[in-house]
Amino acid sequence: MTDLHFEADPAGHPTLLLVHGFLSSRNHWLANANLSRHFRLIRVDLPAHGKSPAPSDDLAYTPEAMTLALDRLRQHLGIERWFICGQSFGAGLTLRYALDHPERVIAQAFTNANAALRGAWDDARLAAHQARIDDLRENGRPALRRFAFHPCHARRFPEEIRKQLASDADNCDVEGIIRIMRMGTPRLPVIGRLSETQVPTLLINGLRERAFQPARDLALATLPGLQIADLDGGHSINIEQSEGFDSAVTRFFTACLAGADASHVR
Image (tube, rainbow, N blue to C red; front, side):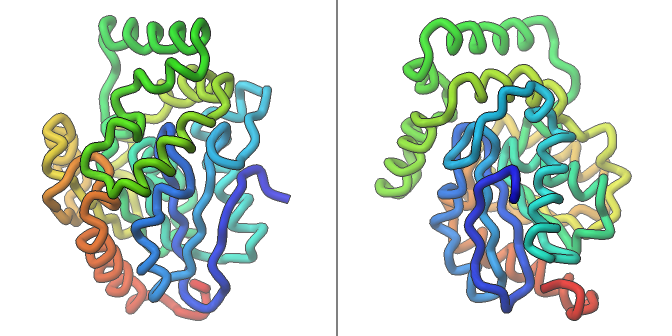
């Protein structure tokens, strides 16, 4: 048994774990199916998202608990080492996973993730975050669409993917989402530990998300070995520039694989 719902390709290629962001699902990676030519893709639903359960225990929504759930999935699948890739909130989890379990990661990639690389919130940011929680408590599912990053607002997504992800977001468990906001988001940042990263790391950066570019530069200054692929797109760069994303991931991970013991990466 595993804590998280997942979809897994058949064994055969090196394994790549894909972790979506807040108000999304495993379907966030539909545009990246071509990665299956090179990797065994494992797509998970985070707690309260997609088909994963929404536990009633607050502690299940901490970043520590969610990264442990990812590792239990690795053990369940009998994988010794894998590639990992996180998007937005999911990047905060995969970056933490690589910090906590470097011996289990061949290499990692991540996309725009302000929540993972930010510093301490000021009073205004804390108040805005609490207001969104209060709105969800009072109004339930309709309040989900008031988040600016709800997929229904994604102008550069292919229409079918936008509709699928909007539906997935609308059907998130509201109480679970509140628990993630209370227990997960405030504890997500890893910028204070980023310099300790031991595994090869690639940031695939959507240049059009201007608010993320200072975090991009900070990540590079903090982790000098970081590689960066800048692409012409926004926050969900794997969807907006799927071919460029797939190419960057494949080139980077293939190069990393050349230096790894292939007997331990399937």
